[in-house]
Image (cartoon, rainbow, N blue to C red; front, top):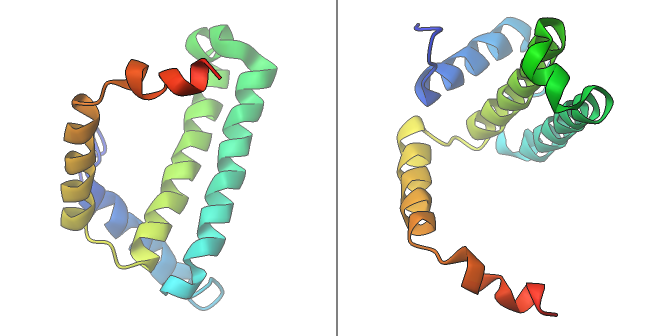
Length: 121
């Protein structure tokens, strides 16, 4: 596996490998546990936010210790995200296809006009 630029397929495989190692004590890799892992992911996002609040952008960009911790927490978010994809049996191809479809849609959106009604209210 290339650790310079992970692909979705590699990240899903790593998620499954970690789960296999701990499957006797961790929640099953089944859809009914997906919502729990979304909550875990949100908890990790909270830890990312806490670093931003406590250390500010300058430290994240210039202090290697703070930056490593920040990126580590973002990695935790992604690990739980992959756990969610695995629990809902979302393949790398399905995810990539729908992600690109949404990206193309967003590239054609007029955000300023779309949200103008909210700004003027």
